[in-house]
Every structure is written in structure tokens, then in C-alpha cells.
Amino acid sequence: MGERSGIRYHKVAPRISWLLIKAFFWRLREKYIIRDFHPLVFFYAFGFIATLAASCSASSRSRNRIGGNAVSVGTVVLIALLLISGSQFTLFAMWFDMESNKDLR
Image (tube, rainbow, N blue to C red; front, side, top):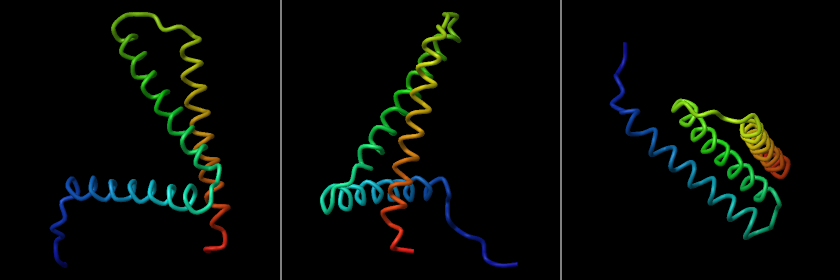
């Protein structure tokens, strides 16, 4: 039927992911900070920070809940707010990025 690939996905996927992440941050730095400043850098930063904070807080609260401790409603609302705002910041940054690259189509 054809040749079998010798690619080991568990070895290749992390390397390619690392290259894509590195290229993404290089492009942000070169295009939107050094060459011509654009506020979408702040949107990406706030989005990543809020999403990371929500994820860490949610995992911590989940461990507490599994351990038998109660989690307040305010904490759950704060985690949801962080997650939603982080997602919105990231989506707005992507939208700004697409708008600033419209001429490349």
C-alpha cells in the first residue's frame, strides 16, 4: 500500500510545538514591539496571565475540594471571571493581529 513513516509523534510533536511557540514570541517582539508598537502585545500578555492565573487557581481549589474543604461561591466566580476575561483578551489580540495583517492575504 505504501511506505510506513518512521516519524515518532511523541518525539516530533514537542519539538515542533516548541518551534511554533518560539516563532510566535519572536514575531510578537519583532513586529509589534521593535518595528512598530501595537497594543495587541498587552492583550496577549493580559490574556495569558489571566488564563494562567485562572488555571492555577482552579487546580488549587479543585485539590482543596477533593481534600474535603469547602470552596466559596465568590472563589468560583472569580475563577470564572479570570478565565472568561483571559479568553476575551486573547481573542481580541488575535483579532487585532488578523486586522493588522489583512494586506498579506
